[in-house]
Length: 88
Image (tube, rainbow, N blue to C red; front, side, top):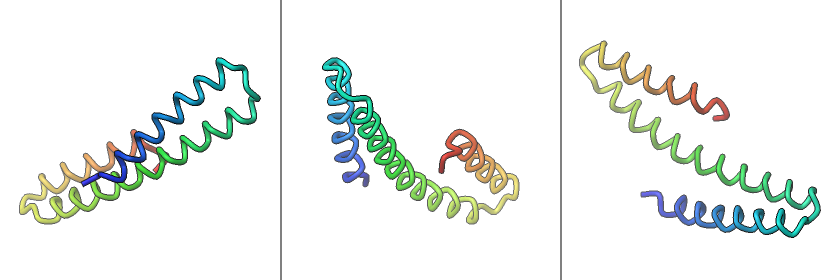
């Protein structure tokens, strides 16, 4: 389901190792910060994709519930995720 996200996470993993080496080699701070920004952007794109999928599944499930208490429970779960990930 998330094959491209897994591939992107592996790339990020390599970038993190690269940053560790850059720091050990005392590379220019600007280069290190540029790489860190790249990683943050890549993580944000993965987070967005997975969150979109979660919302589709969760909202579909919430709407299909006959019980209003169950709908409210699912909506609260969505809000809790939003609170934890306020960057979305």
